[in-house]
Image (cartoon, rainbow, N blue to C red; front, side, top):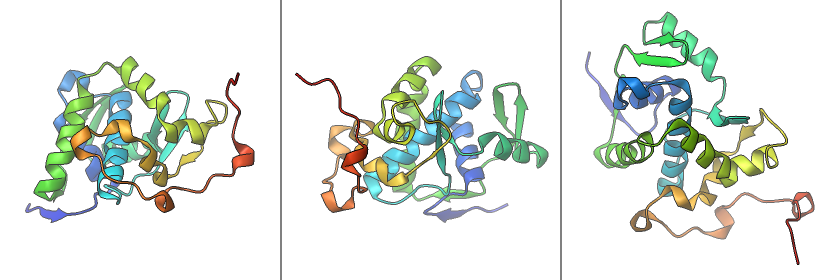
Length: 184
């Protein structure tokens, strides 16, 4: 089967892309979800466009691909992945390829975060502004995360890949809904 180069991945191709980059012992649902979120949001921040058509939700373990369990079960039925509890093994490669520029960027993010422990990945994901805003500081679970919030996640990128952010690109915030933090 020949592959074609695309600029945007389907959820399934994105999942397969990530899983094919992971060492087998690190290939599990938590790591997949954290890497997908970090990669997608870093890509959005850097290129100002989505990498995939995945949507994300905030749950108690941090950001996850919305309906990831249903998606993975469907992929397993079509012999694209094999699941054993929390472990996931890819049985196929993505049906498309990223452009060389995108592939280099995405591979760098996956490499940077895949070496971290699951606990560290969960901890970092809870510190993201997108997660904090969506869950109202861990009070509301299950809401979809607005991808425009990726513009706030400057820590995902290295200094040399940072870009100028026009304030008009940021999502609007209802200031009356903001929570006052400790003040002196």
